[in-house]
Length: 446
Image (cartoon, rainbow, N blue to C red; front, side, top):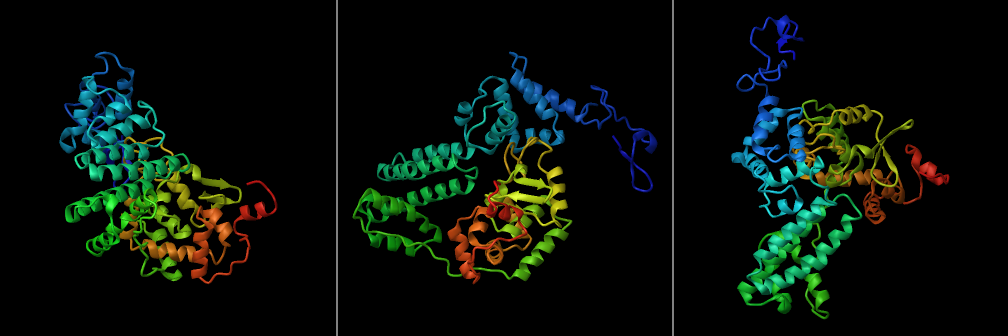
């Protein structure tokens, strides 16, 4: 502990600084700030958690381990604040666990109201293996949300029945298949929720305004509904397509929404933003790294949020980012910044320790939310859609669509469209800057 400071601004110990204030914990004897009653924050937190969780009444090794995990946090003050935030809801949950009212199981947590306090505590328990890992937490939360949504519609059978079929046989079936094939479920789950919600609103409007149900929809009803209200009403398109598959011959449709413009920033604007992120010392390094990945490769923010430190590869040929089949090269100028971030990632001072996420979030075992990245990057003046189009149109001028698709994880069709927009030649050539391309062309295994 170095509470003092010399004339030159260097930290120094208590004795050298001439500090006479007692900075020793009366309980454990360690040199530390006396937080409460002459005790340090770790001792205070241990006392409070022991009173809440009662790990010895009867003995429960899991509760003893939970206390150890929370008190050994790099920032125990944050845990102390967490227990008292939101009206003490987190402390109340811990007390109910200590009273053996709530079992330590996912089933017991599923039966509780789905609140941030409940999910945050579940995440802490799961991340530290006190609760078993769930194969896909996003999918589990969607299933729980769906049951709650269907229960809300149970009093209106004419709405409940078609929504349940659409939700279970279209979305849930698809999400379960995607869950086994990909690790990024954030966007897919949010899209499914919005489509189910908007379909329910449409059927409610159809019943209240015209006394009709899903089986008696006519095109005139769709045209009337879509001509009034917000653009989110167009999210009923997949629901209408599903109804048409249920009832062959039904001639109704919702036209796909086409963008009126395709925003594209100039390459100079893109380079200016790269320079801005490199030089923005007042911005968190993690945000700058996320922004640079976006500016360099144009991959969706949702995918950036789901990257792990295992996706960064360092070899004798340089540093690479694994986004697809080919590792994408990280410019040599930026490699030190990437390495510094990996060695000192934020978000691990409290409950999200020992995580593999490249951008750890606040919740234990979770990455930072894509929305957080979006808000931060937009706040720095980054036009998300414009930059994405500019980046991909620049890259397809250097790398053929097939190789680029394999490097970034995009479909060849998507990159071919960008190549057409950029008037890029479609010859099958390979960029020498990425040695992995040449290796594959030579028949070597990556």
